[in-house]
Image 1 (spheres, one colour):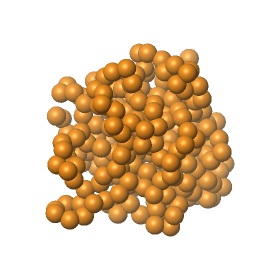
Image 2 (cartoon, helix red, strand yellow; image 1 turned 135 degrees about the vertical axis):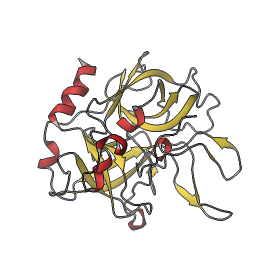
Image 3 (cartoon, rainbow, N blue to C red; image 1 turned 135 degrees about the horizontal axis):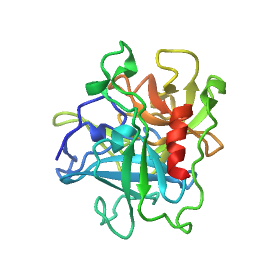
Image 4 (spheres, one colour; image 1 turned 90 degrees about the horizontal axis):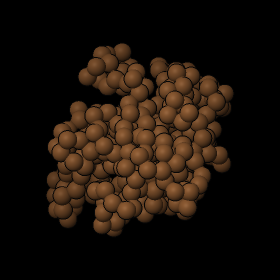
Length: 281
């Protein structure tokens, strides 16, 4: 199995090799997703669990949001290097015997990476936190549509420049699948949890900062009962609370403690919106 470079990306699933669950059962790498999240209860039915394949088969896992029956918005570090992709739209994927392979419960697709994307191996150093990643936005085009009987509500793209108009502490929902707690003892701590769609309420940290033209900053303090992210939920949407408007996709964390702030790649940038819209036209 090919291993992506180790980054502090929210999708640690693409950054590490296969790990072992606490029971010793081998599993493909998992995204560490919404921490201290709440049961989604179909609040965001357009968010699904993505599996990406490399030349050896199922290789890493992310989240994504349906923009239409056939177009899924996710992160570029999820789509980068993938030769195939599939998505599950069930709120609970845990226990699905077909996962992570193809079958009647998932929908197959082709991954596309934003042409302006680069990671730390190609971006070079910009002397800033997001220096190693740029335009972290990807698309999966499904070869078979998700039936409207399964999902008939879709995420919406923002107006160009919307982020710049949002006040500090704007309420957002982070949505995704993955692990929710860290198990200690017997070696390196292991992140574990079921494959269940969760959401976590967070707040936008607005204002100018390095690379604010490319990223949004989000509170990430689950200990304060606000929910947060931890190494995962890559590609999951940052949705303005009470709407279906996605302003960014989850991208990376600046530290391994899952505290402080998290960063998401903006999708309200005109060039990014134009690229995404090309798959919807």
